[in-house]
Image (cartoon, rainbow, N blue to C red):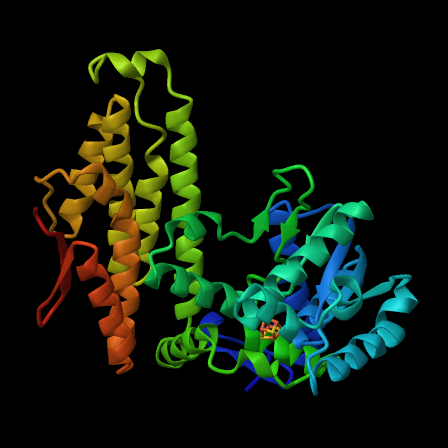
Length: 415
Ligand code: Q46
């Protein structure tokens, strides 16, 4: 196996990109993916001060390493949770990394100890508030990181969440139908409210396996063991399910999460367009402002079909267009050009559109479509328990799923 870029011996293959890399080219790939994420999502600029949340694990230390090597001003904060057999080890890894890598770049490390800051250990605190340890821990860490970032006037706070974390979180949110969390799930969370720092996830384009390889190849000494409190967590179960899907079908996590981000961007874009609609929108389709620019839908559809007849992606584009039409109809926009396009593109897939969905179901269509794509992949990898949970969850919410030998369809139950 040779490096796709320089043709020397490769040390890692990336099936989802159909590529393999030697150590220097792989390091460049990781840096480029991170730099692209920062620029594309407008996370921060070269003059901004960044506070990295480090835990001693591979992701957060790799993030700190990458940011420093890309030339950013990145300090770090470690929160010592006082978990027996784990916190001391992870703290030691962070301190060693600071001495070896961060300090020569002029970066600093702060350490907060939960026992000192909150007056009790993490276990004790969770007993006090009658909440699970991880929920208490998450709240305390978010609070500590945010407080430090705001008080010390950092421009942004960065965490090491990777593609696997985000895909697993998305799966959890979709399975539990947590639409308010779905709306907020993003690689960037602006400092929208006074007292809350801007938060970013610059590693969201990189898989966990890629970050582990980056850490090993770049001699980053990180804590390999998971926190003992993570045992039995649902996130680990979702990650396991997604890993199985990824093995059977490389690129599944990428398609799942990036497909969601695409849909989210379109949805938020259309929401803005409708919010900024003119008063003419109120007076009927005949004289109303047209629906927002619909040409990107056609381009997405053509791209999907050119991508080896990716009909799932093409159908998802049609669902998005149908949803915009429904929203436009409610807002009184002129939806006729969009309807014509939907008929034209649908015809390519042999679809006809005659029944208009209600607005609530129209909003949910892309998510249902996404869920059924995931369910089909779960069934293909024989993970029937999780696949059945998706079907049952939809049934509870009034959506009937029908499997035939060739396809899976869904419809809203009446009454
Ligand atoms: S550190 Fe904290 Fe995690 Fe440990 S106690 Fe749970 S939340 S598992 S990321």
